[in-house]
Image (cartoon, rainbow, N blue to C red):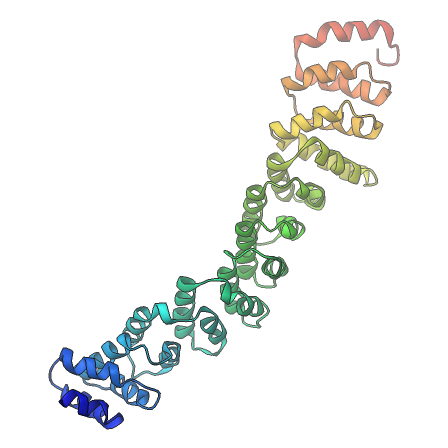
Length: 365
């Protein structure tokens, strides 16, 4: 009967019950009444109790706010800016109310919260994240605060889609290094093929962490569409940048892709072609060599010349048969550079073909 009467008293009953637990832990009966009395009207009384210097009163408020389902728990985040409220208690309440927290509400609240509250809101949003938060998080990738842009990207990294991929791609060129790094990680996680050009541009990033992450993302995506976009990095003055481009090429290159790359180099300055050929030959792995070997049989004279130049940069036993065939090429440049490459290879299989060539090709003698 006492419980029934208290439930009809509203706010006055709430304050009386909190007053009754000043010196001792709250009983289950009193806690049950406090939970059932929670409403929009009585809510301020619970917040006052949470601010109480009495540990037993604050504990009672914490337990009631953790159990009640008749209020919006996201409003607890605003209390982080109050010195008189224990952050540990706020965390306890929010963790208990996790299932009732709306991810999009948490995301939209982020810009309005204090630094400490932001961290908690993000942690909670990360736990309850689903597709509902995508519009709000996508919008926050444009926020002026770099921390908010970064954490919006963290949330979006698990939800592939056109809008998300576009937002992530845009941030790959962000002014802030930490944001760029997170965007690169997100693009790799999303397998966002539209981000490939932007990722290739990050191979020249001044931040080595961003550059390394871009390599990792492009390799993980394994998309040969990256090859034409690697051209700028491949002809960069920095050997480290060229090395980064070839590291990606080693994983994604195909014969068709390297043909596109060679075609793109057709109108480049000779020193650009030499630099890129050196990078491909010196740093290229088995897949690059295989792709180049196919080019030695290409109908395009420029493609064959470029392939032979690449094979000249590093001796590879697998290239010897193709180089021997090239001794009969109709183009004099290809023939003579094949001779040079075979000399560097020091492979005895080339002796007879070279002797035969000496007897029939006076220009190459």
